Structure formats: structure tokens, C-alpha cells
Length: 496
Image (cartoon, rainbow, N blue to C red; front, side):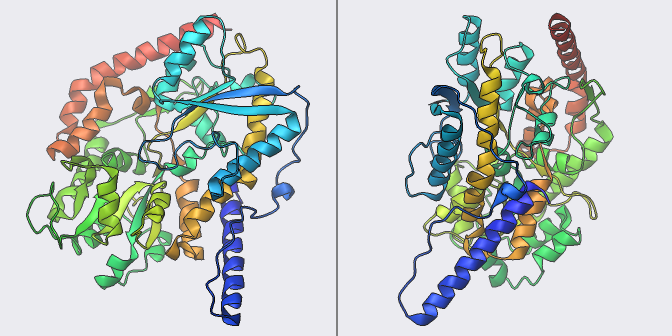
């Protein structure tokens, strides 16, 4: 059983125990009982080795972290909280940090900056001969150039990183590897890889009001939860009263609201990214125009047929509040978004009752693939400018390990306690979403030839001419790929 399954099972057991306790108490008297805030879910020592100890001399471990988004959702607060604040997630962070600080005699501090400025600031420091930070985090698209320039440590070469440690997301780290060197760490220390896979939310009130009798969980388990089924169910609900997809009228229903990256997600969910890797870890182009065109035409039909679905990226005044507002006021059956939306839906005053399903299958009987919309990765500056890189890796590894006991269960408790999420079927759906996560590949990150823009233009133009764009840009794509591989050759030749 993997770490997600253990965590979800433990949290569900806690919720059931708390529910039974509260039910018993409510039978004794009519007073309203308040649910205790408890982040302890299970004793994980039976599956995790004991946390080692080492005296690092009261060293300050400085971490540079992306700031929280302005709309207030929990994005990257996994390090910044140092005092318990009565919030289940804040308390978990404080608990995790306290344990690590006590075991290693360190002080963990976190500075925050805007996500896109972090790599440039770090580059400036390193080129000047040092770094004021022991570890940095930013999105993969901003961090990858630093790795290519030799400014980041290879985790494979650090003493305290091991493939045997169950708390790192090793598969995701390998997806982001460059010629098999792992410059980025991700795991429970930063739960963005758990937050950002696409999934499908079902508004249970809308489903009930429209007399939908389909068992959603059975559809998923029987591999019948497909784009076609998704579209059909959305079409049975949708009505566009004013005939304008960019406006919203009272009484109007959206069958589905969908993130503007839906087309790319469909392509990945069909089981194929843009590149593969050679045995040496070098990217090899594999995108085929015939297959690509077929996949994307199906994606377009899903969006545009019958006015069943709304590409939220095309709404004239689109912002997150509008999307959440439509779903939370029972004006949409489905919402295709990132898993983080479960927490945001639940925080709303008029929150909807919902279920979570994986991203629909491209074709019946396939394997579910949860496409990661973005990823924040953690890196350590090269040992040439950070001589204590091994000790920093030890601290990060301990933080990841302790998050399995604190931070991750705390997050999933907030998800699972959201009204209709308190059932074993929902736990199973979450396991499917998390276990099938795939990262954006190197072509997505680099956007060779503007291919990512091509995906977005599909929705903007309601067009099926992706093959034309592909044929126009493939020469540019191959040139960029060749440049990329030559750059890697030069780098590894220099750093042998």
C-alpha cells in the first residue's frame, strides 16, 4: 500500500471514529458538539524508519519559497508557518518543523518572493559566488534553466537522498530529471504534487435535482468514466438561456466548467506526452500528428457539442470566484479543475456538496491519468556554493518524512470532511487521482515551437486545425530539441 493509500485510510478511520463519537454524544444530549481539531491520524513508524538525529549546531536553514496567491488559497504555505495558529494545516506545519528542528538542532526559516523572480534572484547570487539560501522552490518551468546551467545540486549525489525513502515522490522527480540527474525534489514536504492533478468535481445537488441515477463511482471502477459519458451527462443538464457562452443569466445551467488547459490534459490522458526519453535520459520527440489530431478533435467535440461545456478560460471576465460561484450555487454539474479546488469549494460560505472523480478516460477501458497542471519543485544550490548541501538534504528529507505524519494527513482531512466526502468510495477515487499523476514533460515546460500555445488556440478558435499548426512548427520543435540536447552534451562533458 502506497503512502497516499495509507494516509487516506488512516484519515478515513479517524473521521469515522470522530463521527461515531459525536453521534454517541449527540444521543446523550441535544447540545451541538464541536469537532475536535486533531491532526494525528496513525502511527506511521511501522512503515517509516525512525527519524535520525544529528547536531547541526543551531544552524539556520533558510528556504526561499513562492508567496501565497493573492486569492488566498493554500498554495505554498507548507514552510512559512512557524507558530501554531489554530488552523489544522498551520498546526501541522508548525508540528512538523518543531520535530525536525529538535532532532537536528536547526532553525528553519522561510522567505517568500513572487514565483517567477526566485530563479533569477538565485542565479544572481550564485554567479556572485554564493547563496544566502539553503534551498529554493519555484515552478518547474522557472527552475529548469538553473539545472541546465549547473547551478543546482544533483540529489543523486547527495548523501541523504535515497530511492528507498518512501516520503519522496520518486516518480515525479524522475519525470523532471535531466539526463538522469535529479535536480529537483518533491514530496510531502511540498504537497503541490498532491494539490494540482486535474480531477472532476460532481455537484451532488445538481445531479439529484436532474434525476441522474448513474453511480459515478461504479462508472470509474468499471473504466466507463469516459469523455463521451462526461459530455452526455453534461449535455443533459446544460441550458444556455441567452445564447452567449461568455455571459451568465439567472436560471442558466452549465453542464461542465472546464479549466482552459483541458485540451492538453486530454492529450496526456490519452496516454502519451510529447516526448519520451532515451536510456541516457535525453528527450526524444514522439508526438505524432495523426494521433494528436484525433485526440484533440475528440477534446473539441467534448467542449463544443450541444453547448454542454464551458471552457472557463474563454469567459470574458473569468476569474476563480466566478468559476467557484457557478459551481457552489448549483449552476453546474461538473467542474474540471485541480484537486486544490476541493479545499477552496469547502471554504466558501455557500459551498456545494460534491464528489471527486478522476479526469475522464480518453477511451473506455484505459488507465486513468491525472495530469499535473503545474508543479513546484524544491532544489538545493550546487555544492560549489553551498558546502553543507548534504546536511541541507538531511533536513529536507526529515521534513518530508515528518510531513507524512502531519501535513499530508491534515490536508486530506480537510478534503475528506467536506460533507459528502465522508465515504470509502471517495477515498478510493482520491487514491486513483493521486496514484495516476503524471508531470508535464520537458516539451511542455520548454514549449518548443509554441506547441503549448497551439493547445490553447484550439479552445479560442474552436478549431480542429492543430495538424496544420503542428506541421508548420515541427521544424522549429526539432531544432529546439537538438539545441537542448547539444546543451546537455556540453554541460555533462564539462562536469564529468
